[in-house]
Image (cartoon, rainbow, N blue to C red; front, side, top):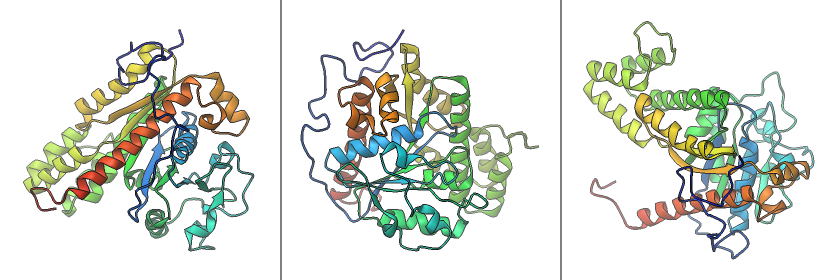
Length: 350
């Protein structure tokens, strides 16, 4: 049966129901941005193509712009770019490919207006498919440039897979979203992506050469040391270097990706987000946060055909309501961080 917002079954009571439409829905008022000189980066990935990463990224970008934020949507999928199409932008002549190929060093010069007020895009068209992925040095420059964009939010639409460039774009974000569809292949690839992202973060966090080698070995799931999970790796590192073991534990605690379940049809589908979190906590040692879900909705398919974000195409559609809610959660996270920063240093003096 189709799952609609007519009830709270499925274990997600925080989502709105038919009689509990949020008072601050998009379009009900504009929010004055609190600019701090640094863009808030939100990366949208999932490890597998076809799960709706671009659909979610485009709609979150549009929803945030409709809430008064200045938003830049960036397509880093240089081998399968289509974010511009979802936002109703004709095939651009300039794109991220110019930055990767070093034809343009100023990322701001690649910005293109969209039909949505407050939303610009850096597309990923016209790429050189023989060498689409940027070098590590170029990747570092790109990441730094993203933070310097004159925007409140930068929404990064990731490519599929676990290439190092994809993982780095995911890890550099203030919030990393993993989109999952309720089907076995999507769930399996989501676990692979989360595991790869965590190991990548670990390797960057570890200081000792021997510990870094251990992390590299653990990334091979058939490694000879028998390390199958991050918890196995933790035990190995603690035995080798207790200080690095403590750093590992801190990294594990701080790694909090967000889960978004797309194309929900049943109450069981809704529970998937909680299930992914539980499995990650049990076997990986970190627990993703379930940010929300998006219902299966024929209006979504029509919006894609019309080359318009659903939140613009049909503000009241079920899927649109949930996408707007996720966008407001992102706004709430930013506000919370701003309040914590304004309150001054904590007990550690940091």
